[in-house]
Length: 235
Image (cartoon, rainbow, N blue to C red; front, side):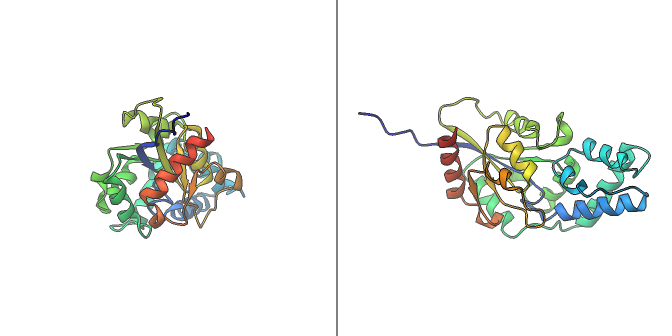
């Protein structure tokens, strides 16, 4: 008689930041567009989609190619400063974000794997009162490649010292964008999709998710467990 399958264990939950916890994807887009226009650059039809998930070095280099400045370093510094100014003292937290994070932190270790610069990640978490809820924070500035490459998620898992290859352990990522979904999936994580309403992910990227909610307020422990369970049946 076959034994029933062992219950799936969630080892950790790793959040994206922009579009998951804060309503900021359009802020980045507006700031970059304005910067390129001011500097006499040439915004391309696919520029927005291309930059979603890029690391700071990648998107600043891309804006340099568009003719938006004299150096990638100068571009990165100015854009970061403008985004921080737009956030002000109250970053645009998405409804339910704080409650969802605190509820999940009571059950599992949490991390952040974001394409935002580390300074902005820390600013947002501090002003939201969430800095103490996350065991590790990783920016794609700190790895070789931004999303859709898996590097930032792999580094977050490594820093959180999640055991690799355990029989029933799953790490769950929470993502909103096409490139983010691809990155988390490529890292071998179960993925909960929270589709970005401003820049909806492609159908093929959404298909990589093991669960989906319409907003972070709907991210419950039950959703996380369902994503982990579904992930194990797909792999």
